[in-house]
Length: 583
Image 1 (cartoon, one colour):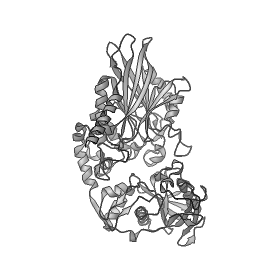
Image 2 (image 1 turned 90 degrees about the vertical axis):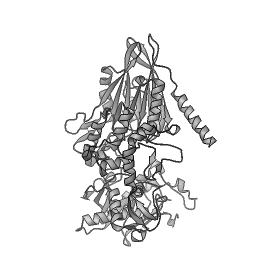
Image 3 (image 1 turned 30 degrees about the vertical axis):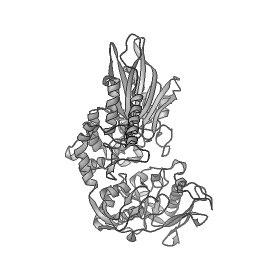
Image 4 (image 1 turned 180 degrees about the vertical axis):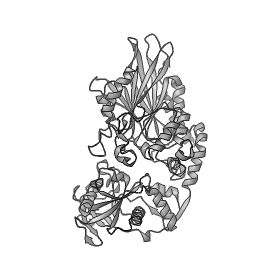
């Protein structure tokens, strides 16, 4: 207990030390300091709670989550700096990610009940000054997004989301906030919001023909001069885009992770508060190629685990404020308690969600775990495949082609316990709000698809020791971009280089012919181009009833009453090395 108290005291001291900054009450040529705080990728984490475990959030790194924790840090910074000299921004992915958001989008949707969205309720109470749209804001459709925006007190920004017909901004591009300075003219801070072009792929069903998403660099070049011309002394870009200059999709769309590119190529920007990558970047500097000025970048991780704090020192130059210094850090929310005001405010909606996720939907005949799903054929992923196949078969009664299914291991921690299965168990297995489609593909296309998927594994020579911790995620490929195919049998020979790994692809004991046709059950993210898999985006769509896969899993379990792997589990793929099974 003494050790825990000492650790907590040290953590609080570190937070207090990181908040120390020179006062911003200067005049007569003395410097003034103003502070911008930032969050990103909150993903509907309001409280420090794991709805899938029905327990307080914890991970191996000791992180905490939620806006209630963020609020405590924000209050501390405001008290230290002065509330009038601080601003609070967010860089997107706010209204999707936990059962809390799902409940108020699908179970009791705010578009029909008139209830205030939990993220609007919490952010309004904390006092955000501007919020930028992330790609996941579009997951539940434009009507729900519009409702949430109306409920927000802070302006919601997205300069590069434009009307598909007119090309005009569909959302507010920027806002300028005024900060008073004692004895001198105010400091004006402009914030430009940029969202992710990948929305055009990932939420094609919601935005096609209605919205376009323009290049982040070109959009910033369009709007930053206007913000400066409107009198902004400091310009901050809040961008829902990582900073590595890469994309998870092809070259048909503007660059996905363009935050550093914006800083490098667009003059007039002082800082970029970015998100999307879910990484903790306390402080990074990029040199602008036009001006030679240093541009400050910061990313506050994910889920409310961090709060970025950016300080700008300004001095008067020819009657205008000029930024002469900038720095940033990120504060860890695990060092503080939750703000009790936010906890009380969120309790009714939190309790409603807890009640929902604890609803029993079926019983499992035995414990099923997803821990080995990335490198072994597991029964719990076979359950997803089985439900997808059965749903498509029922929807296409006249179909005579073989129906196969694609699924990826979204969670290594998901478990169906022996006995009662609750909504949270199913939600923990299928953590994304994807819908189900069926497309037509040939045997040759399926083989190329599987070859592409198999790049997920690191090459391993025959006889070399097998370390499962180093076997997967080659080249940074995430688990959700490793697709497994059911309904056929095949080996993945990881002794071979990428592109030559799929061996003995067969259907009902016979080799799959190149021109053999299949109906393939697949999620909308993959079919719309997420992950860049071959052929699936151009394949003929045979079924698209907008059925949510997670809900299909729940309803199938409820109808069956029992989840018994003897009725659906089939070991149809394995890892090999020169024909010898790895396991």
